[in-house]
Length: 279
Image (cartoon, rainbow, N blue to C red; front, side, top):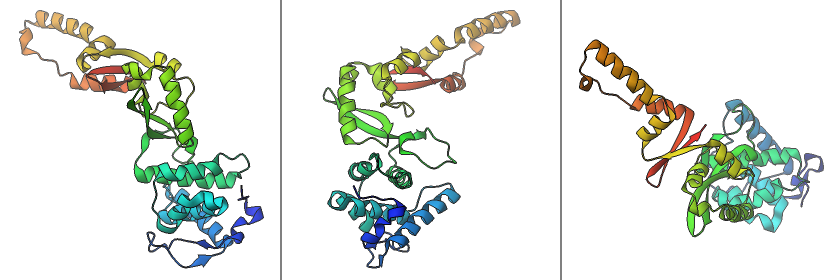
């Protein structure tokens, strides 16, 4: 692949059309040289760090331009995004991951793609909502979990995997989940739907068995099984008798107790029942 390192100044080999900062959705006819493209990317990332936010569309399109230039004909989706800002992550990631996962790609360029891929995931709201990263550090695709649909046994299931994986990896994952009989195991289905469970961890079943705490018909049943509720009820009944209070005058409000239970367990409602997992 084309060397993207700053030392070789690859951008000088291409005329890069940068997006207009004032009209980011329009293609501009203003060509820039490689140094200007590099400055746009690095300046945009510095600005994102200062704001503790994602890069802007302007910066994202500049990154796409740099990667598209390197890929040539293999970067057509990135080229379209660089020119117009249009394109989905599902289409674009096959191209940028080719560069990202190439062992010869410089670390600086891989960092650009971390920012670019994160921008796309956040723009499409396909992230799991939980990231295994310090919010004060630069993003890493390997620590950004993305909601993904996999088909196993003719059914679609929602799982979460790092943004650094592509379509071929998802196909392999579907085969692995088929071997684990995912389509026949509602508990495992519920577990893999959790936003902080990485389906690519390599130890799915071990993690599942360590976390699984039971299946219950409703939240009250889960509360009774996983907390001292019945003991509390017994103690209260004794107090009521001692005080001469009518037992029917007291009524439990279980909602706060269920909320406290959720602080300790993930309760996943799936196919008419609740599956509990230790957090």
